[in-house]
Image (tube, rainbow, N blue to C red; front, side, top):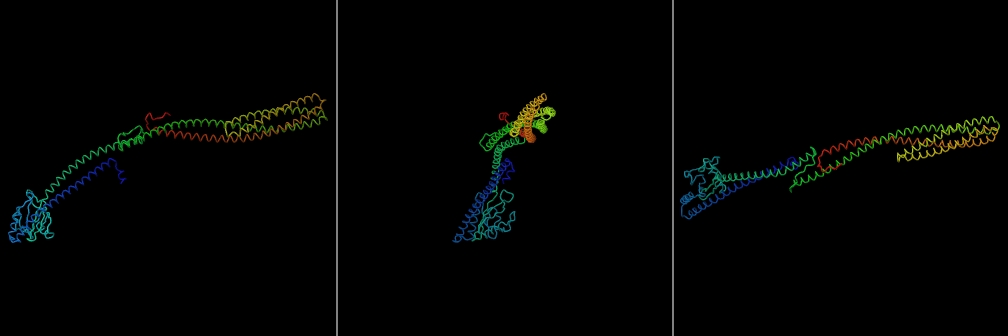
Length: 525
């Protein structure tokens, strides 16, 4: 039932309700009219029966006179027949008498029928009227018979209802009838009056229903139109419905206005939040681009640093080889010092070679000093880059600090070697000038050569430590380089996500801007 009603509009439902109400009233009126007709007919039947029974009592009285011997049967029948012939009720209704053979004993309206056998008399419908009278009396003693019978003033026979009652002692049938045309006339008159009243009621119902339907459907249509305008049109959220009144439609309008107010606030907040989000996404995109540029620059710097570090490691290997050769030269200088006492010439030659070797050592020390200085600078750069890298560069900062310490130590050792070599050169110069003091000088040279060997050993150990530190720095730089490339990849992914987010924010803003809001409800972005 609900699904069937949902297929009809509210207007059609109200019209259907009015139509059903009118049909129900019309049916009730018809039932009442037919009830009135039946009541009229029953009233006529009762009245006819009463008057027939009253006349029947006259027959009983004359039969009593017959039984007492006051009158003979023939006299009693004649007198009572004359008496009944003159009786009237309702100004024109009469009584008649016939016997059980359908022969008319007395008929006041048509005296020519008296004494005639009317068993073959039929009405327009073929009903044998007097035979039906006799059969009713024989079957029930009394009863009603309906038929068609001529009526004065009418061309066609009129429906008539007669009540007949048998007088068994004389074999008579006493009857009287009423024409039903007046009942039909009353019914038709009442029917016309009821139809006129129903027409007036229908007009009033239609007028009231139109007003009620219009009062219901107009605000509902306005609500539906506003919703369609919001859903399919320009998204106008400025529309308000008339909520004045105390009916359910007014409550619906007030609820709609409240709902639109909440939607206005929601859309306004969404528009403001979307603007803020779009600005934030733009800032993120700019930050991502700057981060990408810095990451690319950092990767390039790390690549250069790795190249310089590899070159430095190569130089350190060469430095180790030079230190080994210096160690060999120091050992040779000691041997020459021991044999110097035997052959001066050999000492002079050895001193010359020592002088040459000293120059080479000086060059090597200069190289070591330069490498230490460069190592110190690289350690400082590495520490700065580690500080920029933040938490991921903490370990690398420690390694860079250690490398810086080693570079300082190498620089200090280089200074010491330079001092020693300068002293050695001075001694060699003195040995050259003072050949006669060769023995004592060679002894001093032997002592100094031993010192040089020790220093060279220390330089060799420092070089090995530097090589180990540089290897660790190389591994750390490789890790930093890998992390930098991963950061670059993440930055690219973040930039792509920011671009997608920007597109979604623009799409969302386009959807939100579709709705029209009151000017005072738009928040400043």
